[in-house]
Amino acid sequence: MTDWNIDRAATILLEAETDKKDRGPITDEWPGLDLDTAYRVQDEILCRKIESGHHVVGVKLGLTSRAKQLRMGVKSPSTAWLTDQMALPAGTPLHTADLIHPRVEPEIVFVLGEPLSGPGITGPRALEAVSHVYGGLEVIDSRYKDFKFTLPDVVADNASSARFVVGGVARRPDELDLALEACLLAVDGDVVDSATGAAVQGHPAEALALAANALAERNQSLEPGWIVMTGGMTDAVFVEPGVEVSAAFSNLGTVTLRCE
Image: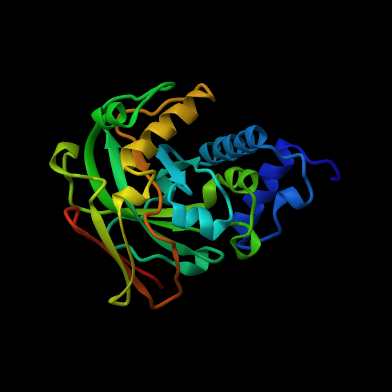
């Protein structure tokens, strides 16, 4: 195969995920990969996963915080898909051998109580569609060497999606000031980072609105019951066997992930 296209990019990224082997950015070999085409690659990967038994359970926002954008060298957020086979039930360990080079980050998580469709969705309107808010941890695992990529690369790679954990404390959005909801990220009990919800687009509801409006550009929408991971509040931390990561939120409890 010498010519790049959506099918080839999807095949190569799925093979990297399955084989647990990273590679250089696709844009190094396919400089014509633009953002619209990258989302078509992402959707093709999702279609293949659905064919293999996955079920869509929601979406995630990637690179929503300034810390993550600086860390990854990109300037814009992205959207990606969550499936049931990415979910880790509470207390289930993360098997790091199943991934390439996992990192973990804390997030504010929404569960939708009604459909949400763009365009023109604002943060306050988006929040009206939320039934409950949770704390969570996302495990990201780029299929690119050293997490080095352009925005089209990471979009095609489903925003480095791998696994996610949703905490056990549910709150209604009107019970919280989400911009001020604080989180302490700890590794083996030592606090390594902290942030508030304001780190995510100024307010996590703005990330939700961004997702609804971005999906509308692709004739897609957010469905009731879906989970929305609003994006990393802090930079992500590398994990390895034996490590325990926890995110202690002001009002959303503590979410813990043990790595094996």
